[in-house]
Length: 472
Length: 95
Image (cartoon, rainbow over all chains, first blue to last red; front, side, top):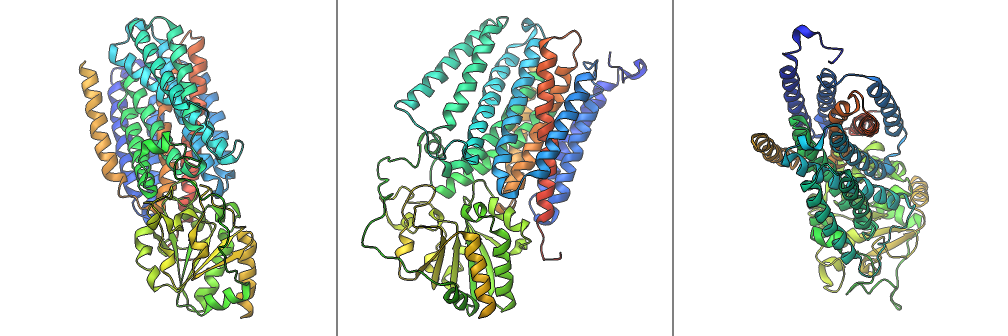
């Protein structure tokens, strides 16, 4: 008996719980709906948290809950860690945090399914529950280990380059077949926990081996996909527990992650299968231009000249990339923009969907620096404007402005939609050095007639520019 | 079998709702969408609570305990960091 529930009303409690779950599901959907505009997004998030609170509190009245020892301890520990992470994280490190959360979500779902397996005598499970358990353990555990690898790549603990060995695809395939075999064995003989442990172990390995060969530039896709998988893991766990709230919420998250994954793939012009199995960024077919070609020259620009160029421009578009995040230059870029606006220059930001290491990363960084969101333009909107733009400042971005994607069929990024910055009157590229970008591809833009390079760390360069602007 | 069908019903309808609602989220909000979605996927906490509080358990309670910690980190951390981000999105500068 649940100590919170008086015997008198015990019969009504399960129905009340289900009604509360329905309310929670509705609040999640409404909360997500409010995320369609920055003006309402915050209240949407609060609505979703209210739904979560309702879902959790009513569950405490479930007849299966007998002692609260572990619940109280677990919630306190989890809350302390969660609050600390949420408060301390720098906005530049959001991709890492989200991968970590992806991993925790996957782990939690796999653990719940496992706990359920050990809680109830296996012969009491219906076939569909066993199947859901296998799926939940597979997706949850893979998401956990895969996310840890993604996290390590983003953090630089292991290099961002794809880690491949001969026949890695074959090994993954074999592991997956083994998983299926043991999945069937478990299905037929659910009483044997050895099978269960083997499938969990295989899923653990698969998660690691699937993400290791994926290059750092593909992280926006990987994070989105893992995000989707955490949702699906929760949904599968809902099938194990016959819990509608888990199914609805997990599926919503699964859909969100899947949409983002598809948007990211489209923005890179690569099918999902190619991202997962392609080991992009290594010498693979046409990827040849990694080393700089001789004989091509770039033009450098001084801070003073750049200040004159921008301050007399009618329109300046700033194109930020991951380099901006690395240099923590989001605040100084806004100061430059403010100064230019005070001189009646029209300043806009053009953001490519895969700029940064996760979807929408640049927007959050700029919002942090108090850039008003109506100034942030997405790719399709800003591409119409470049022809009428005097100066484009490309800060820490590379592949997303590479015109080879339009014209050079041999380029590995051929066909990827890019920001057509080369249509502007002049383009200034802020760069540390002439090294190719994260994907390891040379960029013809640097050598074009209307391009200038401004060498140095993004933050220091912007500081120089601001000083020069104030003297013009 | 009946419960499976019911569950599938909910699954399929929820995916349609999810795709419909979320495809309208603008790119500017994709990062908060992901962290918010992370928080929602912490719903598995509901399952963890049940698993962790079974009587006479040895392994189960510890598994459930671990699951509660992971899921709570997701729920609390996810909603808080999303709120922190969304607070920063402003139409005009009014510091």
